[in-house]
Image (tube, rainbow, N blue to C red; front, side, top):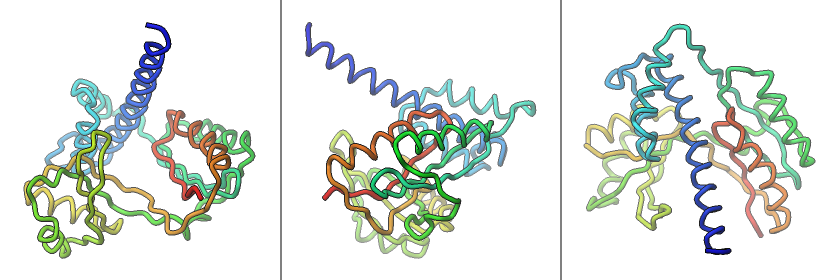
Length: 242
């Protein structure tokens, strides 16, 4: 076995750890969706979206059902969604989305992560000129003509339609709309019987901060710490290696 076995084992553990974090985040999103609009996905588009995203990362159905059941309990507390903004080492802007049942714990943890790597936590809204919130839908294009589909989706707020490659080297179509057009695009794709693999509100960087490989490693120390925190839902930055 030796080193090759240890390498495979380490890679497997990292993959399991990443899946566990994804399941925790999606579980929170399901709880918030049920608290917001009820336990029926047919009448709750936010829950329907969360369940689609859970399916895309192979979250077990029993965990999805358990989150819905837990959220349906009136005694179950909801999560508060908070956004933190700051600068990592070398002046790289970092935006952190969280969902928490203890805001004091969350802000203390996020502030400590920034401080320990020499970064600074700023005021909410201080990075609005760098990150713009967009609606992002991913689906398998199949045999569809993307140019024709692009023309059809323009009336529903489509800004961009392009292909990206997933971790299995499969082509995935990505449709981008404005933040406020999320529901309109979601409904259009459903009516076209396009099975959406994931639908999210993401932050798109409008500009980039150039860094060296060594500087990028410093920034990643902060990002890794943030992404390991159970209260963190997403982390965005705008760094670009020279």
